[in-house]
Image (tube, rainbow, N blue to C red; front, side):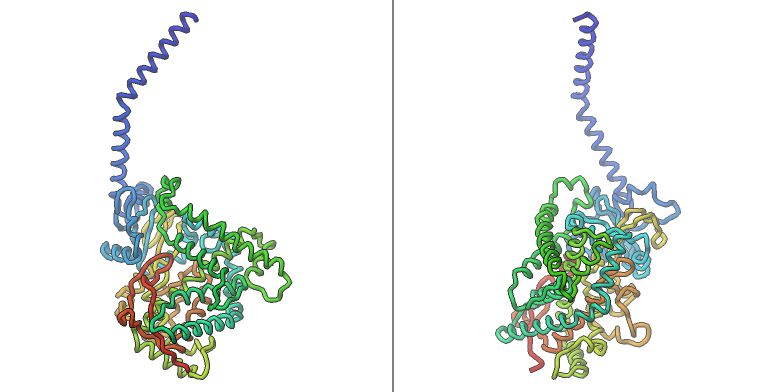
Length: 532
């Protein structure tokens, strides 16, 4: 080895040893410095109204726009606690305390959120093309909903799905054609409840309503028809898949807002989705294959429609599976949840129940069952359903939020691209500035003369729009309304609904917010037949 090489080697060793010494001496202070910088930045961001996610945007916000008021929450996580438990009530209380009912900002860790409790601002958001998309939850993506109507990005593919659903599943002609199916299910419900009431002074109705709703959607979508009183393995399996999907989509997933948690899956949401999706794929694929084998049948259900349009509309098998899964998923529990709330109110409000039954006796009589053509004449029943929707909207935060696809102005405030927007319909429907005696159950408010004579709840009037409004309004709202009003009319026509003696003649109106807002404790009632 040359002298030059030895000198270079010694120099490298000396430098390495010096660097090592410096690293050992300063590594602790360097980490401490980084920690202090992170801490002060977190405090700096957190100090901004709305919390840390909004603080990170303070330099890019429009200087001419007023800051949106909102809670700061906690450093790093912001106001995640607002979205736990009864989020609609917490958000309403927070907005009221800050004087921010028109528009409030808050942070879900890294996610910017705005929420309104005012109908005018709600209309601006829901009918704006800027808010045509939905934020994609990890659970929604994992459960294939990113390829279905609910979460697919606004564009050609989404418009294609919407057109297919509107023309072939939710159009008036198709709703009319499925009337006999709804009538058959209503008759089966009456038989089951009559049989149970004859042997028990107290009965739960939730499971009967859920099974009826599921069977109705299976008939419309899959062309499958079952008797409610039969214990069918296919229905039981699908019900378990729907229940698991509802639970997963209703959870606040911390990984959606704190990306560094995604690899750890702390709530096991990704793990549960990975177990659920293969079961859904097998279930729906089997039904699709059966339809392909029986393609010569004359009566077409929604599976047949999608298969017939598959080539022209460039739908893959995965797309069809996603759409069919979503139709069953979205159309099942909401109807059952709403009917349970309506019947609970009837048990408590005996005078209103009596008024409906007097109306039924006048329009229908007791010699025959209710048919759907009777519903337009049942004015008071319609008012009762609207009043229950006002007090107990199944989706109090309109279930799924919107996403700003560009920077925009909302109620005079700058809202950056990527902001999640929510509408608190529960708060709007209980606002004393909008509704007189908002906490009281008064169906007559929808019967008064003047502007409320034909109060539409289908999205044109944001004082009460339980199905949403704008591009992302619920595509199945007409079918849901038809099903709910007909089944409620049938159940009130057939039975007098009384409080359960097992519950001390009381009804618990406590709520639990999952994907829908349900009764925390299933309704327990006593039934007395009216038509003998």
